[in-house]
Amino acid sequence: MAKNYFNRYVWLVSLIHRYGYITLKEINYQWSRSSLNDDGTEMPERTFFHHRDAIQDMFGVTIKCDRVKGYYIEDSDDVAGDSIRNWMLQSLSLSNVLKESKDMHSRILCEEVPSSQKWLTPIITAMKDECIIEMTYQSFNRDEPNTFEAEPYCVKMSQGRWYVLARSVYYSEPRIYALDRILDLRQTTEKFELPRKFDAEEYFSGSYGTYTAGNPETVEIKVDSYQAKYLRSLPIHHSQEEIEATPEHSVFRFRIRPTYDFERALLSYGATLEVLKPLSLREKIIEEICDMKNHYTNDNS
Image 1 (spheres, rainbow, N blue to C red):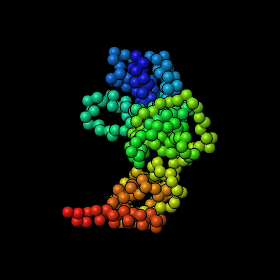
Image 2: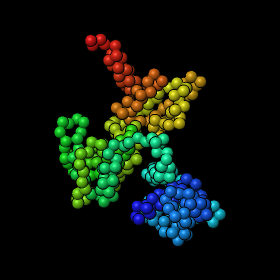
Image 3: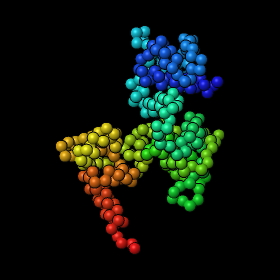
């Protein structure tokens, strides 16, 4: 029963989020078509109010009523700007669509996020409880796994992987750990205090992904006119701005740390992209391209 009610909450919040404004009559029409509605009956107004209160408690989403337009999600503009709540609502909406379209499963393909189901929830719980975690971690740089305690500051998704930023007893500053390299994890009873000035969004603001070494620099790249369309629709970084556009090419500027993962991202665009500034990054890319060429031209037979 509890699972069924949770699915109802997901269905209701995703429905209102998708419509913007919707009346109770319209909600009941959609409810009559839902696969969750086994007996085809309407949703009583009292039941709707109970669901609305439960959604507020469970998801932190407030459903209000406009006498003319109907029910809506309060501060929907703020939700769009809140990466966590927006991601949650988008995930709920997708989950609801998949549940309502079981015959379409073979035609809806999603990427699997390694270990997100196994470790993400206990880490977030430990963050909420402000408790230290003990994890066994297998770094790619070590032959053997290491078990240690750490203070979980925040979690971040990047390039299809989940990471936790945590400060272990071995380091004074927090470090990043990939969830798919965690072998075991448990929440301890020992408490920790998150630094008052810590801001997760600010911490990663100058980074492409999870690398935070060095200071942000001004980076300029040139791409052909076709590739520019992709960068306009899906920017590489939030600081991206187009500073030059011609029929043949465009130039984009970033304020970003030119870290290893950012270099890999630029190289993935191949010959459609050229690094203009800074010179140090341009030289690194040139060196990488030369090494790649040598791999393919050297006769190893």
